[in-house]
Image (cartoon, rainbow, N blue to C red; front, side, top):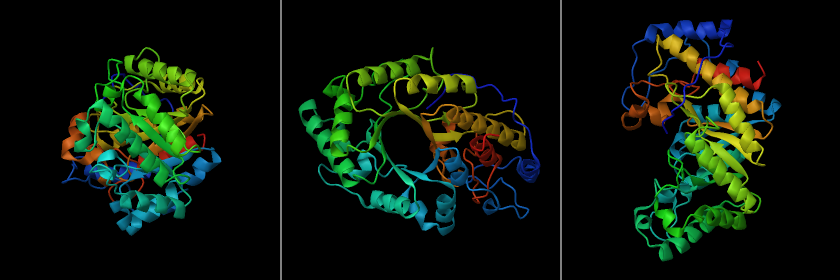
Amino acid sequence: MIRDHLRKGSPRATVGPRLALLLGAVSAVLTAGCVGTSCPPVAAKAGVRQARFAPLRQTAATAKRRIGTALMSRHLENARLRSLVAAHFDSLTAENEMKWGATEPQPASFSFAAGDELVAFAAQNGMRMRGHTLVWHQQLADWAKDLPADELRPAMRRHIEALVGRWRGRIAQWDVVNEAITEDGKLRDSPFLRLGETYLDEAFRLAHAADPEARLFYNDCGIEAGEGNTKSDAVYRLCARMRQAGVPIHGIGMQMHVDPRHWPTAEQIRKNVERFAALGLLVEFTEMDIAVGEMPGSLPEKLQRQRAIAHDIVAACLHVDKCTGITLWGASDADSWLCTERWARLRGRGPHYPLAFDADLDPKPMYFGILDALAGR
């Protein structure tokens, strides 16, 4: 999930009074770092709480967009986090608990409890549910990794039919195939490639048969830059071919794991969204986070830069009617994959503070950047 295009600054990154309050409050923690598997709080503490501000989902609804987050079922044990998610987000993605290794750890032996809990929470709080992901070379059950084609094909069929059938009518969107294209624009040499180069077509057709009402997405990282980027162009050609062949693919998921050291301009992102939309596809930003560790400057300056990038990404979505939603990959910094020792190194030196709410579930400048973009400011 490493980017290779430079993202330039935004001329609209001005500091309003409420943001100035936030920035001033974080100035005392310039040297704060990740502790264990979480990041310390960095947002305002002087009586400023997230409940005082307009919920993101309310503003997103006015803009006719979805604003989402990804969760593990264990996060629902935190009552304050549950309340925050229900208040601010109207779309929910299963972070890890609908992946193959979690749902079918042994052949034809399925585990649905965690997914059921997330689906129920989404329904109780008027949230759209996104399923993630049916076919992926990572987090694949060990037993499936070395299957020959004549055994893997029926296993893939059984897996897709079981998951999509389980939540038929309750999951609005599925990331059917995830990260099937390499950085050099070729189909990844994954176990599924043993089924032939059209295994993606098979997966989408199986998912569509299991739930004809669900919108089906191809999801990938590093494809945001658009025309001229090898991987993005390859994914575009893949989607165009599938559409022409009558494969039931309805959307493209651009993950938006931002590495500010190598990131496209907002204009490049917008034009890329437009070209996928021109294929007749919906576009969603499915896994957005913005790492700040390698940004230059003090922590308040990094958080302001993060705010500007978030604002411009959301604004790019609002420029295109077929861009229907933005999902943040986690609810707070404390829960982000980029605040773990294993994954933080992908973005260089941390801490990265990649999400809109800090470890105390208070809003950061990034929150206001998203809010302002959704409001058209």
